[in-house]
Length: 74
Image (cartoon, rainbow, N blue to C red; front, side):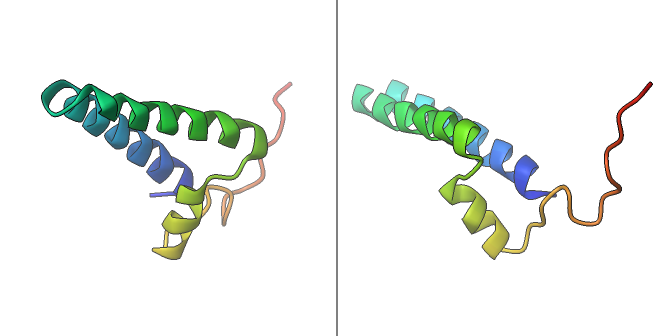
C-alpha cells in the first residue's frame, strides 16, 4: 500500500466513523467531519497532510518510489 492510497483509506474511514458518531452519539461530531474536509482541501493545494507524515513513519512508501516515469501518450 502506498502513502496516497493509505491516506484515502484513512480519510474515508474517519468520515464514516464521524458520521456514525454524529448519528449515534452527538451532532457535535459533525465538526470532526468538517475538520477532515478542510484538511483534505488544504492538502489539495499544498500537497502536504499531517497524516502523510504518519503513514510514511509507519513504513508506507510514496507511489513514485521505484515506479517507472509517466510518459505522455501520442
